Length: 115
Ligand code: FES
Image (cartoon, rainbow, N blue to C red; front, side, top):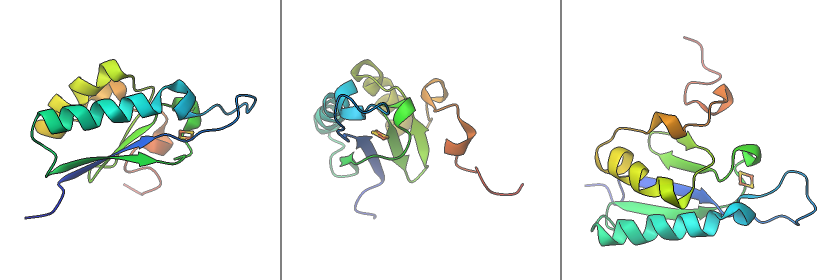
């Protein structure tokens, strides 16, 4: 059995308030990661799922950015209110939550590949 089945990377990158790109930490990235960690533990998933802090994933305009492996699903504008649905649907039932996907095709799993 694999050590971890899923990794949830939550951007907690911090930039100065004056930076026009903004940053996920100022939007609440740390709170989102804490909520993922808390619920994963409460649900007894902490041996299969890990919620890691990530630096900038170059999707700042869509932050708070959350990336889930191994499916390579990019979620954007994630709030603490969205965490439970992502856990229940994607993490537990393997059904990614399309309404939270970053719509920009550059962040879709097959971007850059030929069909
Ligand atoms: S600051 Fe979060 S993706 Fe860049």
